[in-house]
Length: 85
Image (cartoon, rainbow, N blue to C red):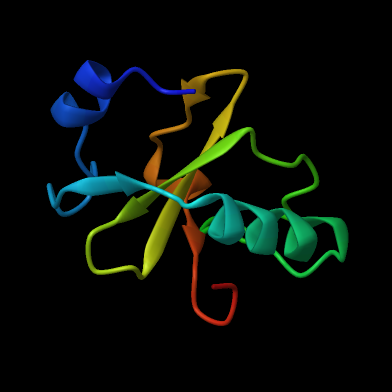
């Protein structure tokens, strides 16, 4: 789980828009798509490892995976949420 104070400080590294924490249902939907092999990051690589959490950009277009409580805040590692939520 991401510390609420840390979440307040984080923003999208590309647009500087705010981020929100995914609901359990949203996280389950994205992890299901990962298991099914339907998720690629913005660099075009397959995403094979499920997330322990997910940060969603406020416009709900981009997500940043969290693994072992560490947000992966690299633009190329972000995933498009179109069709996943």
